[in-house]
Image (cartoon, rainbow, N blue to C red):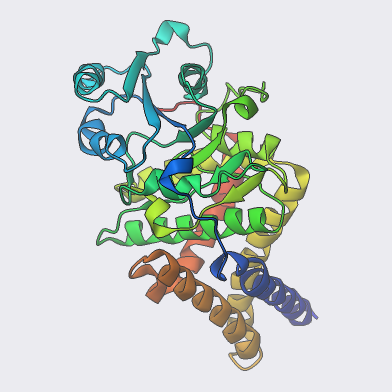
Length: 367
C-alpha cells in the first residue's frame, strides 16, 4: 500500500515536472519577431545604479556602461553610504563623462533597510521617463546593451525584463549558481510570456519612472527583493515584456563560496511569500513536485528496484536535460548543462529547506 501511494506521488510529480519543462518553459526559446530600433527613434534612457562600497567594481564596469553605442542616455549613480573610495571614484568619472551624474545618499537619510530608498532617490533625479537598472558589480555583455533593451520599449509597455547571468568559473558552486540562475530566468521570462509576470532582476530591468512612482509600498523591512516585489505589484499581461538577446545580457561574478550563495538565496527566497497568491501557487507547485519527484524516486528505487520507475524517471530527466541544453545554446552558457540532472538534484534538496527557513527568518541587511 505504501509503495502504491509513493508510486502515484512519483508519477504525478513526474508528469507535472514534464509539463512545466516541455510546455511552460519552452515559449521563450521559440523564434520571436522583434521590432528593430533605428538610431533616429532612440528612446531617451536613464540608467540608475546604487553603489555601496563598490570602488573596485565601478572602476571595472562603469566605463562599459558609460560607453554604450546609444545616442541619448544618462547614467545616475547613487553612493549609498559607502565607506571605501566609491565617492572619490564617482567624482573622478563625472569629470570625464558628460552623461554621468552622481549623488550621495547618506545613512542619515535612510529609514529602512536595503537599497530601495537610495534607488527611489536616484530615480527622482532622472530626466527621462524610461529608467534602466543594473548593479555596480554588473557589466553589459556588449556595447549594444541599451539598444537591445530598448527594443522592448513599445508604446503599450511599461516594464522590460532583462537577463542577468553569472560569469563562468571552474568550480561546482559556480556551476550550481549558474544553473539555478538559468532556471529562474526560464521561470520569470516564460511566466511573462504567458501573461503572468511576477518578478524581475535589478541587475537588468527597465521600466517607466511614472510607474515606479505609483508603487508606494517600499518594503523597507527587506534587505533585497525590491525589484521582484515591484514587478509583482504592478506588472500585468499587457504592460510587461522581456528581451532575450545575448547582447542585452549583463554579467556579474557568482558568490565565491557555498556559504555566500546560501546567504544570497535566503535573501531572495524571503520575498517569495509576498508574491501574489497565483504566483506563489504556480512556483510552489513547481518546486514541490520537483522535490517530491526526487524523494519518491529514491525511495521507490531502494525498495522496488529500477524497473518500476525507469520510464517516468527517464522521461522527466530527458525534459530537464533537453531544456537545459536548449537554454544553454540560446544564452551561450557553458558546461553546467552537461551535469543538469545532478545540479537539479542538489539544487532542490537545498532550495526547499532554505525557502522554509527564509520565510521564518528573513535577512535584514543589504551590504
